[in-house]
Image 1 (cartoon, rainbow over the protein chains, first blue to last red):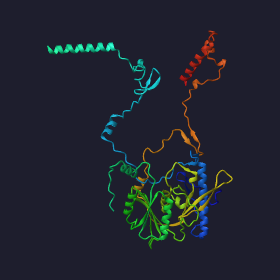
Image 2: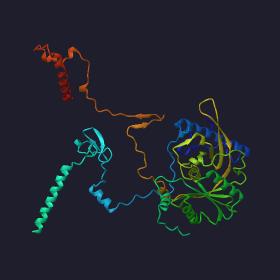
Image 3: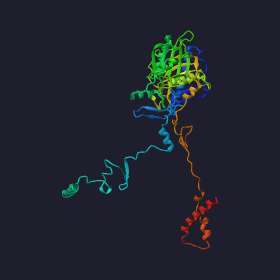
Image 4: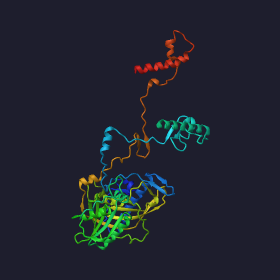
Length: 176
Length: 319
């Protein structure tokens, strides 16, 4: 874990890309060394980098256990900005209405919602439908429990006759 | 070459496809295209196969040969880029003048942005298959490291371009978190460019951090830098633009310090010293001076509070 004596400049990390930049020059040019020496040199250098990167990942990042039981390392956002693949999407051009609405300060109407506050019970209730205001008690302006009422025959008959008489009178009027 | 005809989507499916291909705020991961010139050495074919193996599944490999000179006329490459929605290319060619030549090209909006020629050293090249060991799983995000001062140069040169291109090529998808098991291999670049790929082996050490050991996985490639084409300043600027409204809102007065602790700052209003409760003493009672002459004994306690308030008001007026 100890850094080599040649290490003067510290490593730079970009954990979002899992990237390590080691700015120190290579001590002996690998091209001049014999092939075996060169590989050993590069491997030693790579080992230091790998160790530093793993250490940094394990110390600087939060580690969580996923629902499946795997250990996950949370990575920060990358700091090295790379060029985009395609241009930034253009903003949609405003329509005539959009411009007008903006000028006038017209905003899209917000929906009122299905619930309304019922002061009597102190609860939020549906304006209509199941458990709605209509199904509330008669006092609250709804049908309530009296959703089925027996027909009063007498009253019904009297009403019908009254209507018939009215019709007759009308006919007579026309006939005259 | 003629540009691709503009398609107006007729079905929802085509629209989805075109939207995915078009400019987006959060971009897709780059696809890399691997292709070769009419003459391509065996060594280079192997290099291409291995790089493709490392890049899978975000890669397309062409088998047919192409007569393209990227530095002279990249229009064919641009056509391929658009056709395959690939914005990175690795082009292999072999000639007497430029033996074992690998050209890395990066595209912006299906146009060539920057290119770099890398000449492979045929002597030291070793393929993935030449190392007899278990390889890392396909499609994992590799660890990347760049050693050498050339990569960190403040002025743009072939090495900084190589770093940018290699980073773009191997970074894989941008993820919020990685599985510890997924940290299986590292690609190491050292200047006067040596590409080495190692498998990571973690061993227990005395401390709570593991000891990392490396085992070479291959490929092993040494490059020399050839020609390069730097990005056009305007195009580069356009490509580095950030979409609006993407920045995370900075929370006021909340900071993270060097150690990583969250620090909050609270602003209190100006303290009203008039309201300050000081030590209560009989001698300091205001009632002593005022009421002393009249000698009121009863109700002095009740009056005290009112007087303190009044005193407070006066202090504020004076201040």
